[in-house]
Image (spheres, rainbow, N blue to C red):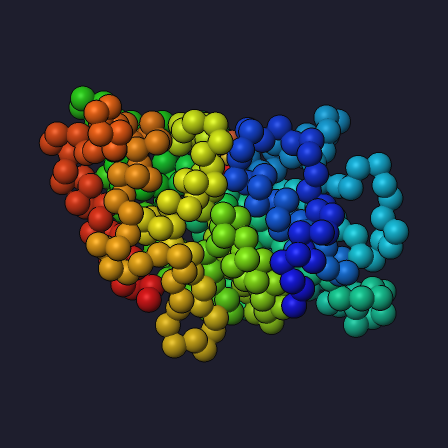
Length: 332
Ligand SMILES: Cc1ncc(C[n+]2csc(CCOP(=O)(O)OP(=O)(O)O)c2C)c(N)n1
Ligand code: SF4
């Protein structure tokens, strides 16, 4: 395996030139994924429709997937990007995998290629859940990334199957009369494990070493590897500029989105950078407070400078704490 320093030195196939919001975690993730796939093999990316696609492939405007003006020194080590319908990134990737394997057997391809599917949580876990689970069940040798920003961002910040309890979205509004999202998020890590994934992980660029090691393992996996990347969304979560990485760390440390890995055959998964003892974790208010999607639940006390629960909203926070504790105990 390459060292972190080696990986950092690599050029990424994702370059400046996108129209993603400043500080978007989807862009930060692509930069890092692009360095990891730049490992001497050709990569084909299968992108569904989501912010990470519509804001990076806007031909004839600048297209962020590429290496500037330079033509690759060796086309067989280069990469291709295929965009198609919203929900089908895994099944299109599966088709590419099978075609490439046949071409390799026939001698029409000189080297094996790696195939990577990327979609948002709406694309993968809502409308595309069927293609996700069936591609895993067929053990297709691809890596699937799901960028989890808890909403359908590209179409107006609607609630998705991963939206946190209490969050304000355009379809689960909060006001005097509406409580925000009432539904607990889908347990997607257990779901893809049950479907038969060879490797399941949740990683974040906020913890680069774990991110790099896990993605390298996934690229070597002989079955479907599924990697979730919690993706703070500055516009949908409504937080201040420059907070993306800190919020990604708090998302993990408070237990909303724990870093995690489980490979097939492991006796239970491994949680990373989060304590299972609730007393040792930062209060959930620290993660929720800086985001205006939770402002009906948590506020900043100007005297103490700390985030506190709004009077009468303690039951909602208790429900969130209970959900987090159950999630961590189930995963460990
Ligand atoms: C069949 C179909 N339904 C709806 C759409 C419209 N659409 C495009 S992107 C998108 C939302 C994507 O949400 P998500 O996958 O969570 O990614 P994000 O934009 O949050 O990154 C929707 C609903 C579509 N393109 N195709
Ligand atoms: S709306 Fe959110 S996910 Fe979309 S580009 Fe902006 S920050 Fe990224």
